[in-house]
Image 1 (cartoon, protein in one colour):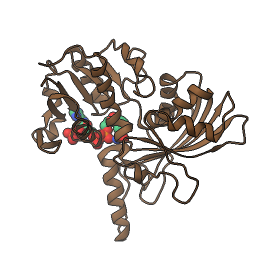
Image 2 (cartoon, protein in one colour; image 1 turned 90 degrees about the vertical axis):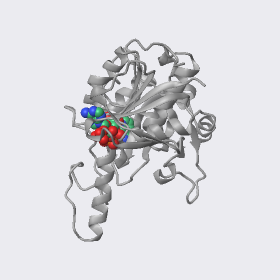
Image 3 (cartoon, protein in one colour; image 1 turned 45 degrees about the horizontal axis):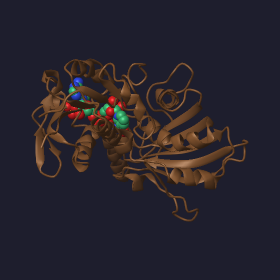
Length: 343
Ligand SMILES: NC(=O)c1ccc[n+]([C@@H]2O[C@H](COP(=O)([O-])OP(=O)(O)OC[C@H]3O[C@@H](n4cnc5c(N)ncnc54)[C@H](OP(=O)(O)O)[C@@H]3O)[C@@H](O)[C@H]2O)c1
């Protein structure tokens, strides 16, 4: 049986490992998979599916000729150099880093929201949005289609896995250290993350917002509608996996909580869990390993004419990264958009 030759770049990282898992779980049609990372981990091994073990290859020496799809998550500065190199060799790149997201000739895609953006891939590079943006636009899209969004105010509660392996290690070691009364100094994060919340993700911008907050604003506009006003406050919390968001939305048209619930229930990729009783909502721990974007706590915002508030949770390594990238690859396959197919 034919299939595609897929190179996973950043295969030893939090996102790359999830990509390998997702490709196998969803039975993406592969004829060969390459695990690629830095020279530091060349020769080490990663698992693909239940049975296969892949030897990690060095990105610097990897030749992309003959590879159909590159699923990239090696960090922005590395993608900046190697994604164009792969694309020039004829390998379609789906890049998880922030490097190309806002470039006008690079589609920024969430398959449930704007799959039509894949009709034009002039540079052979497709960008996967930021993890916090992805889950928010999956929930906003059906509401925008029905009630037209004017403004979004969002506060995020982002898991440490959003900062990769190092972020997870730091929460683990600081938590452990606190129980033996031997506090570990922050290395990756700016302040202790165990038993704490840090209102700072990525670098500060001139206007006082952080780059993570800026990404949520500009990416939502690019994916959904440039007329939507967005303000975000992004916070790192001591959760390993699963980003949560408190979202407040102002609409042009009248909307009730019941109407919004019905629209969200019918939307692709969304699962509504909202029973207004103890435990009748989803927490990040429950989203771990799941594909859905969960919406809970849907209620009216009485402070504006047409407003709603809700709680939105998704696994940041899956829908926020690996799953979204693999779904993009699935659309390329389904729509015959890949330039060639391996024999
Ligand atoms: N975590 C998330 O929720 C999330 C969501 C969306 C997007 N992203 C983006 O995805 C990227 C990776 O995130 P992550 O969480 O997977 O980070 P991570 O756990 O730190 O993994 C980084 C990966 O990149 C590889 N790498 C680093 N430098 C490299 C180089 N010079 N050449 C080749 N490979 C190199 C690493 O390989 P070695 O093991 O050899 O060092 C590792 O495989 C980041 O740009 C991040 O912003 C992350």
